[in-house]
Length: 115
Image (cartoon, rainbow, N blue to C red; front, side, top):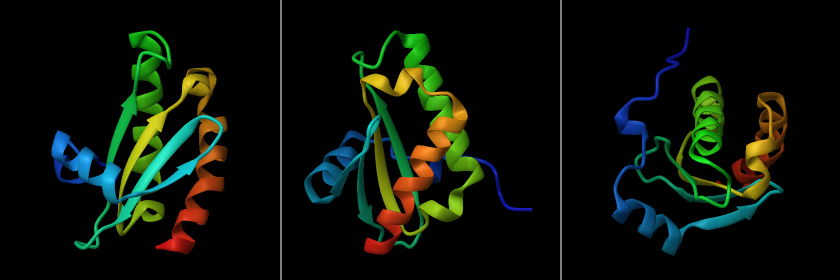
């Protein structure tokens, strides 16, 4: 069975890391998310999740972040080899988990082709 955890080593936690990714990363826009990604020199994946107040209340923002973390935990192999900042857009709060999965399942293969 694969590792389904989300350890600190796989998180983007420092402002400096977000800024570097913003400067040197590639952006991909979807209906409900903006994904900024950059190839990792370390060969491992790291993700950061951003949800501003435009997404909704604190409850809605936290729910969106939980859904994204759950998708990441179950599909780590799709994120391998890059750093990601996943930014939730206004409509993301209305997504249920299957809809979020469909959006990510469409987006990640496009990114994988570029890695």
